[in-house]
Length: 149
Image (cartoon, rainbow, N blue to C red; front, side, top):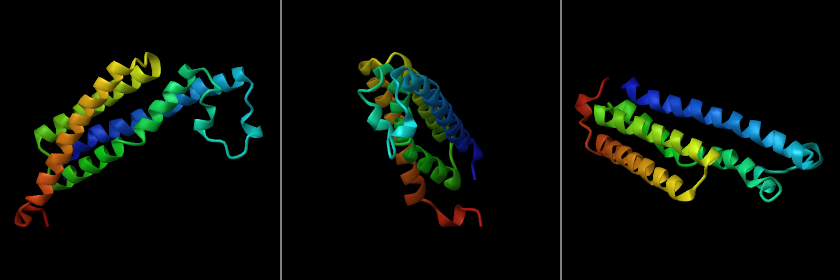
């Protein structure tokens, strides 16, 4: 197993947790300021706060949701490549993806200008596509006799 490919995945896990705390740190004071009592709303969801809070207070929450979506594909590709034997290109693509997602998070949670955010998303998606293709190649064309027993 190639542990180097797992380091970027571990970093993205930690970054996702940082965004969770960032979201709570922004949203909870915004809820108090808006006079919203979470205990009085059984079954509420984060989406219910759209239009009730200042839009900027929801930006970290939007990004946290994004980190629970597309990166699941990244985690799968990283695990596949770790099992099959990641190369230097795989590790570089994984770090590029994670760096771009972190930059995307910071941008979305602070400035949130869509053209830049979209560009960061597209470039990170290209890195993810590269990882996905390399995972397919690593598995579809694997030589079973070369795999560890």
